[in-house]
Image (cartoon, rainbow, N blue to C red; front, side):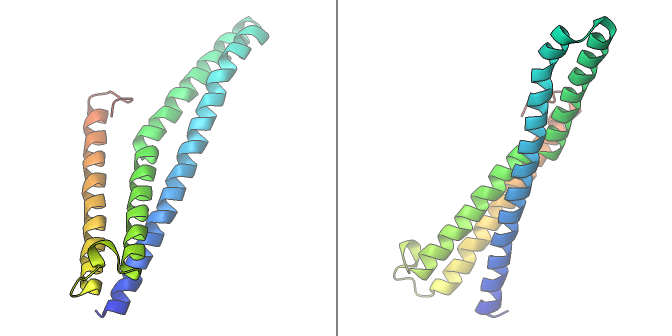
Length: 149
């Protein structure tokens, strides 16, 4: 694989991380916003709704809040968004340093090879962090501690 193809692959990975960061951010914000609206509506239901309706509506809203929190924890949207965003930023930084022959690239005997190695280390490190967060989430789910992580 020549350097141009490798550089294209790194650019594709960086783009993928950016898209995944935006996707996870959007899902997290949408779910969390819905959860906040449902939580804020419980006191309104308690005041405005008649007896039986109040009980059932409050119970349903409370259950929905719990279900949404479960989806947030299962999807790990906030954690993934932050990991993907950090990886994208690190890859973008490498592009800037490499193109400017700055930082570790200043005076490097083969800046292209160094760029490839450093970019690979960033992606490999992200995968390791992602895997650790998934294992932690799985062990937390196994203990029934939904909010712990």
